[in-house]
Image (cartoon, rainbow, N blue to C red; front, top):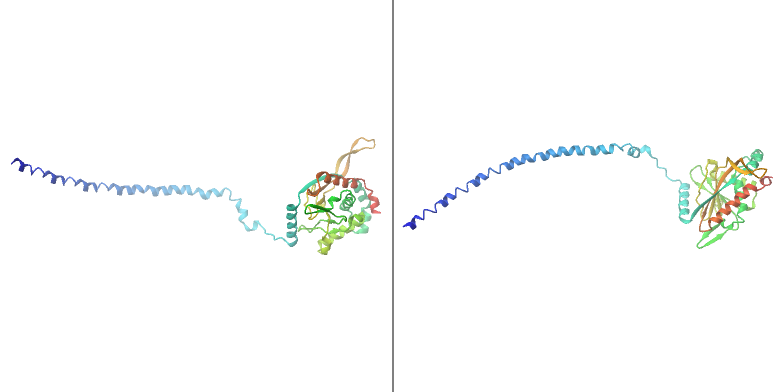
Length: 312
């Protein structure tokens, strides 16, 4: 009989069924989770906090704004298409720099003897010829004298050889009203005296600027002289006129104090006309000693030649 009494003992198990009822009570517990949703609302509040961070971003360019302003304005720039002569000049210069091993050498020259001859003959020359006797023809004539002793400057490089030209066809670079350059040629310049060279340079330059040169007059030059001196230049380093191996620049001749030998053989300071001659030359053709000796020869001719006889 005690065994049947044990049967009621399991009844507490049904009592355990109500115990799960707290689980439904746990359902309200998640209600704080919806409360957490409002807690997420501060995240949107963080978005406004980000807005101040983004607000300075536009302000950052505000400092350098004046710099791009001129660039962005159409009125700040002008596009100038190359003229035909400007384009051809540019192409020739770039090709020359890519072809020749450019080196530069210069010497200072005392033009005092030339200055005295110009001063003595200028009025008569200008009345007779119709134009001034400038420094350039004297430099050109001195070059023609010097080239006999230094023939390699009157040449061109072909392959692995230097081709020396026996005739001297002197090209003179002419500015075309700042639009480009052209170099008409004084043929057989070595055979001409100072006055003839001066006349021909003047004629070629005038016809170059009025577009009256024939094609043959700009071909076949063996050496080139460029003359920026009238614009007040001090030292110019020109680009070689291909296929030549050298080009000579004549810069402004100025009065300046120099030390010269006095009557008693001592040093004295005198005011003389002095200018620089600069040679751009191709290192493939010759070396620095040759270039310097050539320039020194031109200097000697300018300083010591009997220029009076050239103008008679």
